[in-house]
Length: 114
Image (cartoon, rainbow, N blue to C red):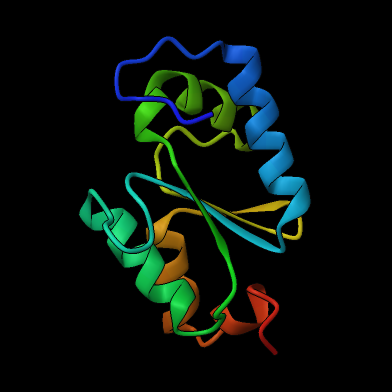
């Protein structure tokens, strides 16, 4: 089921989607837009950074139910902003954290690419 922007998604349904995406994917990026059409610069940067090191990763577009995703993701990570990256079920950070890891040469290892 795909939500249209402004739709009334139930918070419990979004929480379940977040938990499932984190559990079922080695690398998952919750972002505004999708891999082919990021809808903000931070999401675009996160996609670029992850794509440098891994081919296969999941993206979840949070825009169709942004308030519910924001709440569910903050409950998982303690982090308010989007995008958010999870690797092997663990929260890594947003695009700023990915950029810092990349600058230190640690991003590939963090993503499980090494």
